[in-house]
Length: 478
Ligand SMILES: [Zn+2]
Image: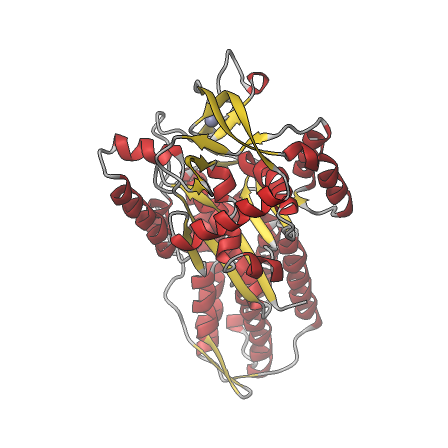
């Protein structure tokens, strides 16, 4: 076992800028990347953009922009959004990079050598918004895309197929041997029953498209955008050898692309003779105030606006605390504001401010914690560890806030600030400052900026504490 941890977000389409749903996926992955980094692991955390899609061509045309200028501009927006949100990704991949085309070519040749790529005639539906081929029976309400509820395009062309059907049994065997391959379990069940119903070969190229990675030795065909995009996870590791040494531990994504990652991707890897990823981690769809996110409804939320109004940490906290990971979630600015004021301003912020203000005035020495505090801290640490491991971020955070409430009660019940006996007061304050210090430590992956501010205000020099007051972490918002 090496010391590496490799986590990915999907690479996002660049026909538009990031919305709150993309931010959610990326922030959840960021928490895990930071958490594993904190455990001393060597983290590769990749995100990026999928540029080789047909819808990139459409979007550039719509904006009246030359395609390369368009992709450069949009890739810049995506990259800088993650930067502004303080995401700790170690790579940002664009599928138009030469390093990627090369790996895709290699990968294709391996599938071809395995006898899994063949020419055929494709007739069926194609939704450009999904970049997905659909059969008649997949469509809903009189022939619409099940995701976008728009009419897909009828495609009739010669292209290359991938022999996915050949991998039905190998996939089922693999699933049986890897109980946690897809999380949460109910999403895994959906995948398994889908595969059990039987797999058909999939079209893996498009005829005479001017944009995308050409099929090796057949310049009239470009590789189907998904067959190219999934390989980005290998490109990030420096190519096939890098992936062989360390395949992804976690692919994080929203549910609408789980089938690509849990069925087609493992089958492609089996075909290419390469190791499979550790786990596919899936979250639900997002609605805004109970309504599906849609441009035409004008309810698209820009995560940068939210971060500007409430701060990055508040946005992170809200998304992770409010929505049980895995389930569909609803974003509401009203709820964000409520949580901001109750949990952050009044909760953590107020608790930290009071403890640090009291501690600043004292000569505190390291002592022995009361057993009640020792237990409370232990319970919090264990719960945060277990729940984070299970992607139950909302429960991890609830455990931290339970510890904060415990500290608050103690501070008020004991009226620590009014205790006349120096030794007694300092002993009780030591309990509280230790709790706060540990709260900040477990919160580091979740709300890094605030966590660091608290930690920086609690400096031990040998046995003596130098605590400093801090400016309000989360000023109340009216
Ligand atoms: Zn669609």
